[in-house]
Image (cartoon, rainbow, N blue to C red; front, side, top):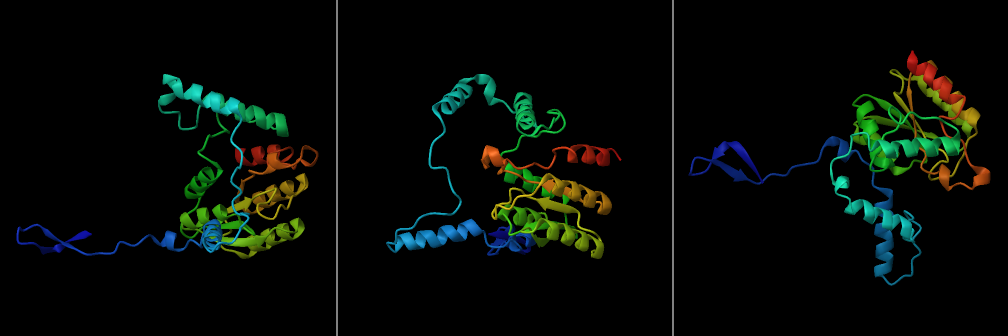
Length: 255
């Protein structure tokens, strides 16, 4: 229901009129959510009596270890845990994140300036897109795409160019071609390795070439990598900020 200033009731107050409030253009631009469609089809099959094996989002089937639950309960009972946290997240947690990053990938991060705690990777990624992108901006998105990579760009009212990721050399060539022929050049490049959903991986040299392209054309790189820790230890894949990319990125940002 809404009111209209042009109509008045017998009491002299604006009369109530029926109205339909639509969603914003950025919401209308969103493609159908893949996992919601998969769930809809799965539930329809189950209601029809079919035995369906769910290969959708892959929700955890086992609870956390007891020590994790006990620690959460301990923290919940501590009165100091119930205030507002710092906007960047608790410093001790950011230090632990930096420590684990160094232990696993050999990269030193400054917990004061280079680590932010988010509700989840999708929440952090979406807000980064809102901060960086707007109408008229373009982002290069990997294809096939993890849904959040497309939706976050669309919610920021920006445009997405999808580039196939199966062949790393071809992807680099396509990024270069796109940047040479677009005015203005894309503002953001999103990379995601090990790639979800295709499982494609890259070597460290790939990231070096990505940074060279970013410097040449002036775009930003957002590397989302929620999957490296799920790889076998013997096949652990590189992350974006490992040397020499770390030093290359730092020298670029100082300029």
